[in-house]
Amino acid sequence: MNIEDRLRAWAHTALREPPPSVDVADRVVKVLLTEGTTVVAFPERTWMWMAGLSVAVAAAVLVAAIPFYEAWNDPFIEVVETISWVIQ
Image (cartoon, rainbow, N blue to C red; front, top):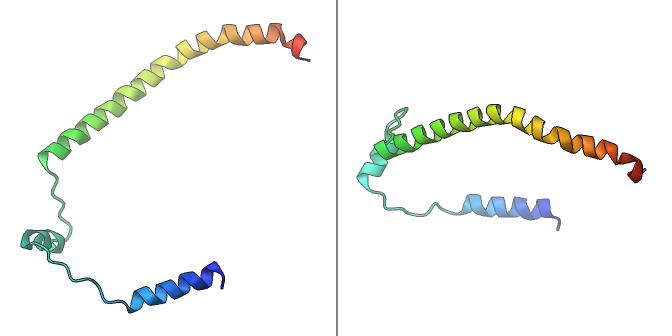
């Protein structure tokens, strides 16, 4: 029996099993039944703002660091080109 046959057999077995009984609080059911409304708590908004600001700062640092990287990398390339005859 190959892997596809095993997966199909497991899928058929899973479909025949009854769902487990779950005791859910009324407020959880109410939240699940309300369609299209998302409630975001205050601490989550704080973390979202912090994440957004962090991304903005990281992007600004990246843009500012590119010229410094090119200036640092240029002497290294010159040294490699100077000694490249040894590698050949």
